[in-house]
Image (cartoon, rainbow over all chains, first blue to last red; front, side):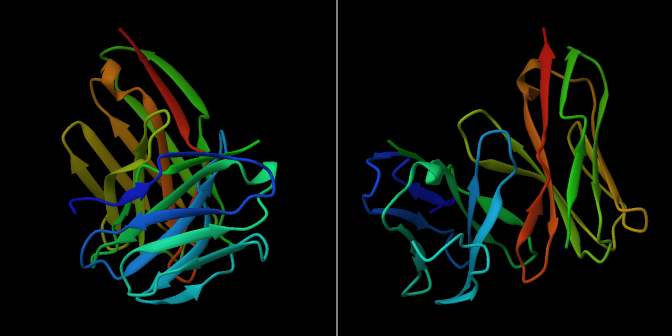
Length: 112
Length: 111
């Protein structure tokens, strides 16, 4: 596609439930990132993929968070046993060969 | 650890004014700096990317400068318009290819 696509755009879930957030990157961009943005803050890094492998997952807050990119294209961020503190906008980004980053529209996750 | 600060946190100006947004970073060993725009409830739109070998980049009414040695960048917006109202974020690499962001400057341009 022309840009980074994220689905769903909004997700409301109950505390304790499992959620999956999807990212469709720009075709040909091998580097893919997940960030999380809370209200009034800049995005904070979660995890970085180069191809299929997670090159850096140091930003994942705990083991309830996991992400995959099995074929080096689409990525899924998975959150188990959601907590109200997980409520935020989750942003996906890819990077072009000249190192410019392009972001999706984000998924707004609300845990009630 | 890379840290990014943006000043001011918020700015309100009348239409037509020229304005400057500031970004500072603590680790000058960066290979680029990127400015983004974020509209309420939306994702980030890339405005300008400055490579470390460049001192400035221009796109339309926007001009971004980079001074690596002092750890500073500025985004200059000429002849501001109400449609420029948004939050402006700057970001620099923070190791292992990730970006470190400031908290942004919320700009309001009043008609």
